[in-house]
Amino acid sequence: MTTIPTMATAPSGAPGTAEVSSASGLRGVGERLRHGLGLIGPRHGRHSLPVQQLEALALPIGDDGVVAGVDAEGQPAVLGINRPTPYDVVLIGGLWTAQVLALRTAATGARVAVETGRPQAWIQMVHAMGGGQNGLAVYDVGRVPPQGASAGTPVLVVRDCGMRPPRGRTVSGPWQSVLTLLPYLSPVAPRLLRQARLAGIQRVSPDEAAELGRTMGLSRTEVESLPALPDGVTLWCTDRDRQYVMTQPTDAEIGLLGTPRRMD
Image (tube, rainbow, N blue to C red; front, top):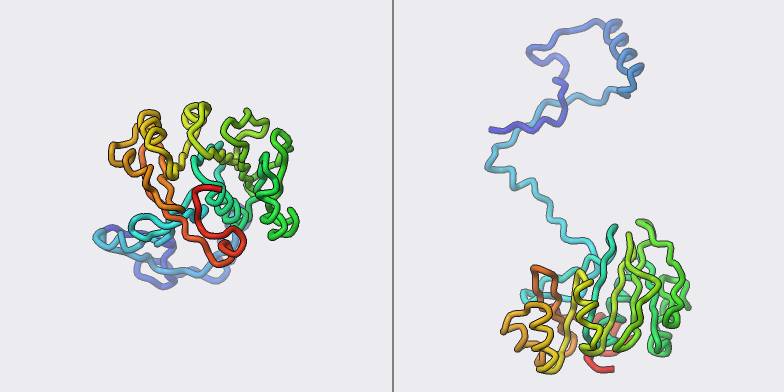
């Protein structure tokens, strides 16, 4: 049996403890306070737990992040966007998914800066969120100012800059992640995928799927699945993991962005 002590002190009057006078007890309190040990709290006995029951102490706490959708088992799939270390994400897919992720990231309290050559595609979101005062702002390509990201105000930069996004001045850093949206597999995609910590792939052509398979080391089954992925489904990939995720919009997201779609 393993014991897990919660307090090192024994209850007053317990076997093996000596009774002290009130005067000596007060002197002891004063001595402890002088040494910065604080006030004496209530005294409790030790608690013990059999080793076989230790697993019962586990707490059902899930990952922290943005819910990207549900996995094949119907469980929430969470992307850890807000991190204390640089984090680059590449999404080869549709604008709809990028906008849902931006909305949900802003809902976590993070700020979202969108760098885009098609501001008209984002302006409805800006208006819906209070004209840029509630976490989402849109900038022209190459015009994103320093965001001042911190643990209290994390930032997601969404780069919606077409097939060949230029190298951005605003890069990932502590508490500032960058999501680069590519509508198709472009000549700059291999470089961006090598730099990325996370890559999302939506429906692509068979030739693009074969190229991604070689670039990312996908299995034959994964390569064959890519040209037939339904709207709203993304294959999210890290160095070691692969997961198909279906993004299910809320009623509010449908009202603002419409239903899931791969093409815009």
